[in-house]
Structures are given as C-alpha cells and as structure tokens.
Length: 126
Image (cartoon, rainbow, N blue to C red; front, side):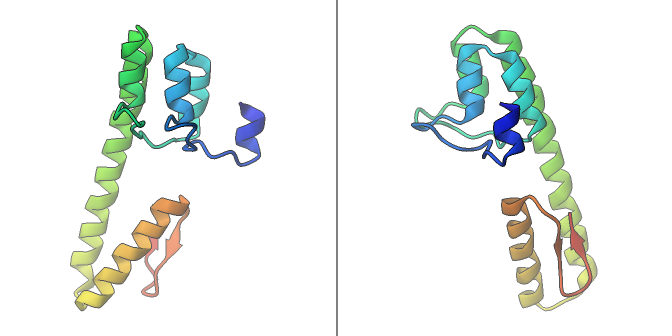
C-alpha cells in the first residue's frame, strides 16, 4: 500500500465501483484503512450507494465503521470551515459578481487538485 501511495496511486480510484477504502472496509483491514485515511480519501458511495462506513457495518466490522465515520465527520467539519472562509473572503471582496464566480471556480480547482491556488487578487486558497 505504501509503495503505491508513495508513487502517486489515486486513493479515490474505483474498482468496479468500490474505492480502496470500500475494499479495505469490506475485508476488515484496519491497517489499510488507517493508511488510506492518512492519504485523505474522499468518502464516496459505491455502485450500491454504500459508503465505506456502511460496507464495514454490513460485514460486521463495527469498530472499523466507527473509525471511518470519525474520519468522515472530521472531513465534513474541515470542508464546512473552508466554505465559511470562502464566504467571508467573498463578503470582504466587495467585488462584482464575475470576480466572485472566478473565486468559486478557483476553489473548485483547488479541491480537485488538492493544491493551494493563488487568485489574481492575491488571495491564496489553501
């Protein structure tokens, strides 16, 4: 797992609809789940509409499901804080709508690439 992640493997890749986190949760592989969590995967649903939490629960791995849920909750809080910051930044811009839209597009790019983005107003989205 470490070799793959260290060489740029996509932690959100899909194998017949299941992410690596889904697969580790299904097997009850807590070591792999922890390693994947360190790589900050998205909490995705599989083709059955299940999250990794639900997959772990369905396979009887309750403590693992709780660990993944704890991670998912932390991610949700982080994302909420990011959006709060974006709203505050937008409110402080007093800019025309097209500039606000541009800022939102940059934020979307940052989320996709997981990298900081520099705006043309000097604001850095991290």
